[in-house]
Length: 331
Length: 172
Image (tube, rainbow over all chains, first blue to last red; front, side, top):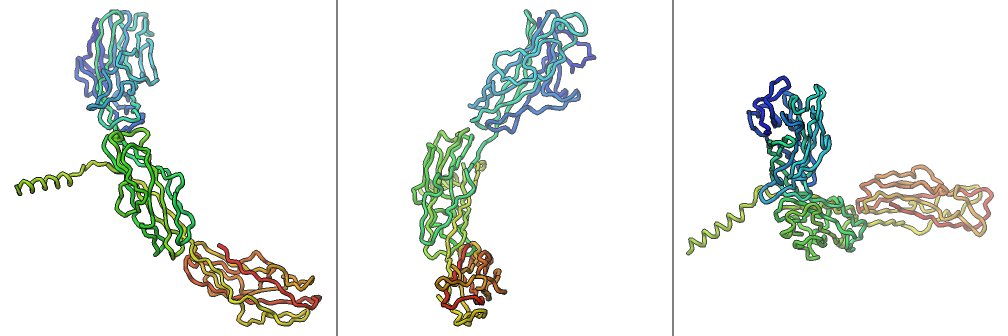
């Protein structure tokens, strides 16, 4: 026994040819007859670690993510399964099939539903989603001989936490199979677009030297260091730079940058440029450059630690002096 | 040969100038703060004053007609205040004149709050004589306050030379 595709958009008032198995996700305008596969689904705007559901699409029949119609004829039972034709691929990168999830959200069938209203990861082997019932409410006949049944699905992606940017594609395969008979499949392409992640975080908003007297030098500030974390999934080399837009200033008075030193260390595997005596500068000064394997350092990122040393010139007028220290993370 | 060199230089320049338009950049800022301690001085222009001779029941003003000049200077950013107090009552042996009888008043050259326009008792040690403005806390400028002292000798006071220490305190 073989399943065949529907020729028109099914509705329950139609007279259907037997043994049909149709996929027309999601818009009816894309349905064009026999053996037509589903239209492409896409999930966009996701970043590493994100979980996002496929946006539902409004159709004249309601709001669906994917509608699959199935029917058998001679067999006493049939089943429907779903799987992915492989991992989602973008160039040399991939997202495991299991990161893409499906959920059976609706059926008008009287049979057995699997993973109903529950997301499960795709497999590259068929996983059962529906087994037709031996009888129906309408009659005592097996469900295979009644009007076709509709299955609706939703999809979601759990993006791996170190996923490189790109548009990843695969095919969802829907398989209808008579128990002890033939089978038929239809496919619907799916794509997931992962964006570039490029973020810098600093573990505090200020560094306070507190009270100092003219002529005094204070080192090792802050004692635990400022933790500057750069995270990226782009795969490109990156740099961390430091600068300040003006010297420490209090009204008309300033403390020159020659008295303001940065130093520190890195937890990364790249190159640290600090000499221990680098003065703050108005032009961004290189602090760190990534190693080859830090182009994608997700999810942990690379931590750099900064400390500061300040000498108050003799005769410096009293006051509260401020300077904005800028950290730049750039490719 | 020269032409080849020029072409190579142009190529190098082109490579340098063609930075990737899509290069990503993120930045974050932290504020560095230091409070430099400035001058914080209090100067008094005399180390003693007296009331000459007063009889029991008599009141008198200090003999130093110009009073006591107290100059505060701060560039430490924080507003400051000045207090005047007596370390103990005026004392002569076992005899004392309570501080309720010892008063002060005066004038200020500052822009802050001067509380010495009226007589104040030295027994009231909580009140500030002068509270600076925020601007005065940032300027290296003398703020001069002039104090005058008055004493009333109670009727039952025994004769003797009474003394105490008057203290001026400047606090942020």
